[in-house]
Image (cartoon, rainbow, N blue to C red; front, side, top):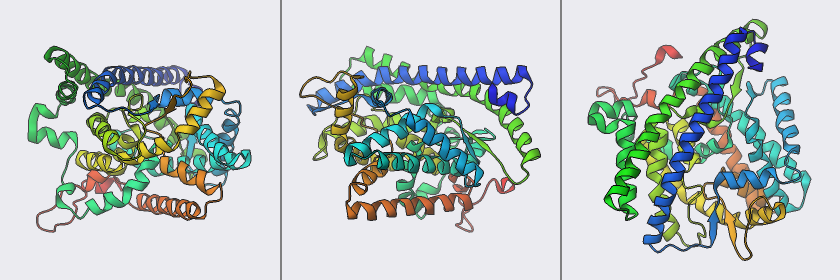
Length: 441
């Protein structure tokens, strides 16, 4: 509301935009919570029936955020986030005005991880600043695609969980040379081929039913789970309409305001990832990966955590969606390939989460128990920073290589701003991608 008024919106429109945005986030959160509430018991049943017994309890992002906000130094990272954003806007190194202040806790969590490894607040603040820079540049990178794919002008997602796309990018590029991955695999294309089976409610029902049966639910309970998952997946696009109603007039007004005053700049507002929630491909990918993550937990040597609180891996979903432009087949294959990285990352950081939980008392951890987060955001980046800032030379090499890869991916997306699905229809004559949205350039 405040930003809308600042950009010259009529008071009535600014109020409606603010309220609709709030409704969208609350509605999406309710749907997500319902999804987690029904799939977690099914996942536990599946794990129990497969005999999996692992020491670390997965308390998900809610537990991770609770213990992070309880850390006495956490609020310093607000200053770091805002300071980095202001400097980068002033130096024209970003066009993102980040309004996603809730997720400052993710930067604070990184800071604590580095402090745990180095016992240095200086390194912790440096790590937080690095993450803030990366998040803003991710926002710059995704803005054109989000507008093209979802129709939200002037909006982006500067969220570190999308950093997963960086490590996925080399494999995604290899898929460009495999014909099957260059076909259209988004929900609209599937609807033409398989009819009602591609409808979100039907796909959700089938996935929920299979998950229930795999967890040895009885037929009635399995059908109930299927209906619930189908209902939630049908609700997501409805909730996303509130984002559309809120963000379209706001984005247009902001764009016009900025063009009048800053002729060489195009600013975008950074918001949390649920604004992407209307994508059916996002939810199908994350739910299908649930049993796969449990199987990985059972068979991966050295893994110590069973996905429960973080069983829905938003990093794989959001990163895969933005990287591939909604190519469902690519998203699923990338999810299967990269899920182990999260399990090993959460295993590595188990002692960090457990100590922070006990020090703050925000989460009750019994003596001899361990807690962690199975779908921890950017585990590769956080691991390398923790090791490098502790003096590990190999980790420094790895960190530099990872950041160099990020720059390569960033430059690639700036050169190819259209989503991947715009190139997925192959011409039989030329064997080259046919750009469907050439005019959008």
